[in-house]
Amino acid sequence: MKDGVVSRTFFLLLFIVYMLVPILATYIFSIAVRWDRTILPEGYTFEWYSQTFQHPYFIIALRNSLMLATYTVIMNLILIIPAAYIAHTRLPSVKLQMDLLTILPFGIPRVILALALITVFTMPPITRSPFLLVSACTIFSMPYMYRPISNSLEAMDLKTINDAAQLQGANSWQILIYIIGPNIISGIVSGSLLVFSAIFAEYTLAVLITGARFKTLPMLLVEFTRRDGRIASAISVIAFTIAMLLSLAIIAVTRNREQVPKR
Amino acid sequence: MSFSGFRVRHPGISKVIDSLWIVPFFLFCLIFEIIPILVLVRDSFVSSTGTVTFSNYLGLKEPVYMLSFWNSIRLSAITAFLGTVFGTFIGYSILKTRKRWLKELFTALANVTTNFAGAPLAFAFIIILGANGVVTLIFAQVLNIQLYPQFQIYSYAGLVIAYTYFQLPLMILLIIPSFAGLQKEWREAAVNMGATTFVYWRYIGLPILAPSLIAGFVLLFANAYGAYATAYTLVASKLMLVTTQIAFVIRGEVIHDPGLARAMATVSLVIMGICIAIYKVAISYAPGAEK
Image (cartoon, rainbow over all chains, first blue to last red; front, side):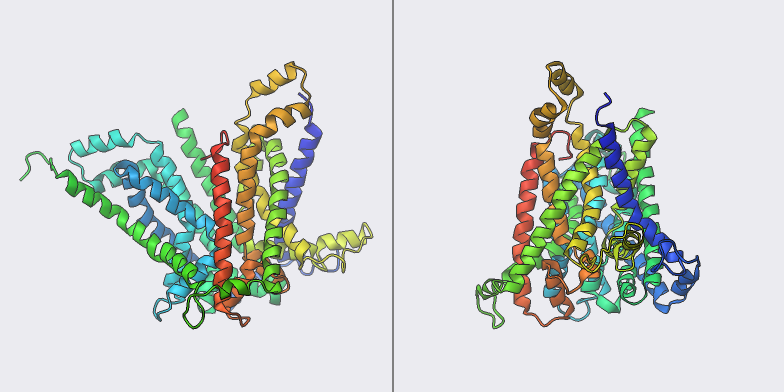
């Protein structure tokens, strides 16, 4: 059937142009000497990158963002893996509630989550602290961690595995670490990467919960969009390049997992 | 003492031990999600002097808050509609791409661009469509069309363009599995009976796809409604949205009544709840979609 080739090509071209032009423009802007009077930049330079790296707040913000993303991944791993494992193996009644709780954050806009947390946690050590921010990020990112892990668990014949292992005298920890773990590792890896890249780019929760006292990379970026667009474009490129590499890693991990049964 | 490593526990005890594994998760959700949200909703019915009241909700009748809701709902509906329509056509075009590597490349593009949102996205559109942006310059110098001052990227139209950018890849990734529900045999049968492409889509394709399209639309609607970073970077206080209004109260940039923010948040949660309910119903009728 030949019909629709023209319109399909049109939609695909539209898709490519619309998606790629803003990204490419940001990359070019970050190495352009000047790009606001002519259609092509007036020369190229790495000056804005060197200025970015020399900026006192850049390293702090980068470190804060990396720390925030790392702690959020760790919190997710600690909370989700044991609970998901038990819910899928021995407490099926809990699984439904867990499914629901891990979808719920999608229905709560981050602005509202931040408002709720600030309303409730008003006492000094915790209010507007990085700890509260990590907790908020963990709530928000739970679906990203739970979904891939839940999918990997559902792909296994957990009941048989569990019974066999228990019969051999393995305790819950041993079953989880030596048997379940290796089988759901691709789910854990892609879940962790998803959480990491979501939180690394998270602006809303950070600016509303901790504000200026815990500056993250997206916060620095927003500041610079108003002060110096060239630095802003350099920060933007750095942040997006990291996110892009992470999501390509996720694609690679999920592809490997899908190919396993075919071998 | 056990003989061979066997340990037989009382079933009740092992149930208790099993439960201990899930306690941290539920406790965490309770403390940092459920209770704060419930307190927020409760406090929206409490006045600044501590009495039960509807005054916070009555205060929302002020034009500025009505406008915020109207702006948010309209922006979400327009960009969800654009995302649904174009996302569906693009998703279908990707699915029909013959070359495997090309198909994977398009899907990867949709995957990667979901990360380009928030502040970086808003800034990118300032670079290309700002007063001195490259697209603005191309229009002015090549096509001799002056976009400014009629058009502004720091405006409602700018928000529509930027929001549609993050809606598109989401819809594409959502809709592609739904096309699997359309079986090739049905199309062949329809064509054999003399149906044209239009007739096939009107009477077979679209009705089968409808639940997935509705589910996609409400998901995109909720996605746009809750967005904040893109709007703040692009329009800040120039345009009232529900999320930017609530954020102003938290950031203390504008003197606002916190009670009003809580009422706005509660109304928004109801809107989100309706979206999720529609999504759940629609997706249960959708073939091939992830339940």
